[in-house]
Length: 176
Ligand code: GDP
Ligand code: MG
Image (cartoon, rainbow, N blue to C red):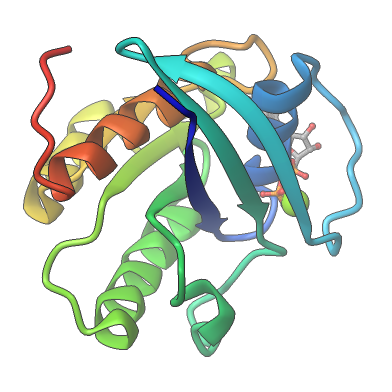
């Protein structure tokens, strides 16, 4: 089967690790200081359930509760990664505002999505419990993962899970 082209946007409050997760997935390394204002599109080939994908990953510059949802992220995006940091309650609140705006602007009731609580290696500074994250994702009917970009913990799972969610939304049900 030829590779399927899929475009994914990664969104969330500043400094939650959007770029670190993107670079860890695409390049397999943890970059400690990455310009937070850079907006980049990465390309990565990956394979899930014997299907090849050509993933275009849009690493956004970050949003806050006042940001107007950027219209360029509402079009031709197949699925979204919404990231907060487990060490920041603020980032957990912001992700909920982004979600509301996202549904509003796309006019859809369901969008393929993975909610990610990043920075699990900083467990001593945890402010958002795993249960809180899971409950929010359940409300959204979204997938949920906790990750560490630093330790490369569950990073590839984000994108593989999202690709499966996108297939489900397309009506192509697959067993994991
Ligand atoms: P972005 O603004 O959401 O793109 O966040 P960055 O990827 O630039 O990361 C912001 C800061 O958090 C940087 O100093 C990263 O090194 C750090 N960071 C990102 N992910 C992790 C992680 O999983 N664990 C730890 N300890 N630090 C992280
Ligand atoms: Mg960034």
